[in-house]
Length: 486
Image (tube, rainbow, N blue to C red):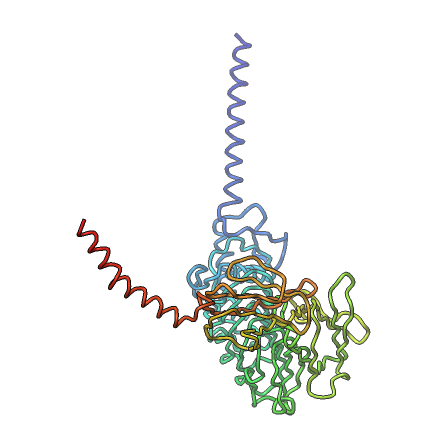
């Protein structure tokens, strides 16, 4: 009997203990997760932190902490990540900046902040003067213009996919002096609301035109290297500034006239022109690349031809360029251009910093397209646009030599340089030249010949007409008459 009573008491004690442990675990869980938005990471006796002891966060403590951050950061109206800021990656990047600054000042992790506030960037408490966002795959800055960046002096967003930028992007950035948007895909940008900019890096983008006339009263350093400018006239220069250092290395500019080269306020860095862009540029042997004075403190250019062992073809230094520019043509092959310092070390980096435009530029020189002459009745013609009756021989040639291939219509390629058009009809001929495995552009020709190369077309029409008349006037009546007799 006593044994049974002892067993019963042990069972009751076991159940009571389990319930008590479970209840304590629930209390602990509730204590550490009673507000999922704030997790206190303050060190013990940190004078910069509110008097909240670790593991004792009450609702009042967390409410006080939230109110403290709200008041001192001076937040304004909320910005929604899906409607106001279109690209959620931009929203996330900005949110990280806000968190880092709150972390830095208060030593708290505002870990699940779900709203971004406009005046956070204008707060004198946080005083955000610099923003840097690299390689976030951001494609749009739409919505950034509604935030107030009162203290922002430096904005860096590089290595992303930015395209056309809104005109009012900089409207709420009155203190902005430094802008780095290198290594994007920017095709259009407006500086109407950013006249105080001093340093601008837009290298490695897709710009074809830019207006710099909004800048006033300062010394400017503008980097437009490795874009798509085809004319210096597409870069509108300011007049209300002290001086302009303009870098246009690696574009497609060919009209650097005295008007620009002698502009007293302008210091130009020009380098090689004609091989801009991220892909290999193709030119033919008749096209010359233009090399202007580099003016980059001893930096010079080496040109290599790719092969089993790369061959140094030429070195271009400022001392080589006695005139305004040096134009050079190259034979068929694949080449690359590198910039070097005076001590022979490479002067480029393949990252997204201010020297991003100093990279290996590749270009391919292809054969010039072949030409055609036409032989008809013993005479040679350069052009053959009219339809003729008789045989026509097409003779293909290329001054550079190489192997010539042609095809008629959709047939396979055939090596050779003569095509005999002797069966009548239209001959659609496509030809190309191949030198060292590199193909020229394909060129097409059309030769029209009579369907009957023996009898002239007009005579053929007369014979067809006579036969038709004879058929209806003689043969048909005779056959009909004989049939009716039967």
